[in-house]
Image (cartoon, rainbow, N blue to C red; front, side):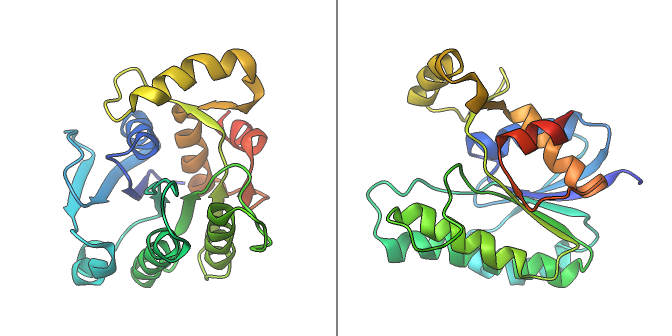
Length: 217
């Protein structure tokens, strides 16, 4: 297919920044619209930014969302210290609201969502974050996208030039590949796999680490 145009969220976080860097250097991507609450701090000929203080108000900028092939939803927060209602509003409600807004303007859109390893598809497990992520995945897959793919990566290693990597993650990233090499992906691989879901599709809609690696090649 022709070069693709994508919408991306979460560019001020590690995962989103890494996926963005892959999109900017990947020849299959023509244009990236970064939607965020604050500037991502990256300048590139492919890149356009749309600043939205509240994703629940994304509809106010709907006229800027048309003409895209894919949406890479990389925004997210840790559940540590959060009540379930608050985490659900940010993780589930925000994501679904955003998904509906981009789908309305792009009926043939592919939507990729970064979820997490051990997400609970049954929505009934003991881990709060896993239940909420599972409900988010399940309801995204019910929407009439051209394709909806839920990414469940393990530890993701960043590009060397990334700025949005917390110190404790740098330590973890340095140790984890030595102990659990099969549970580690690079953000370049995640980005390439996301691009591939738009250009080629994939047979599964929940992508574990091995699926992401297959798609990235």
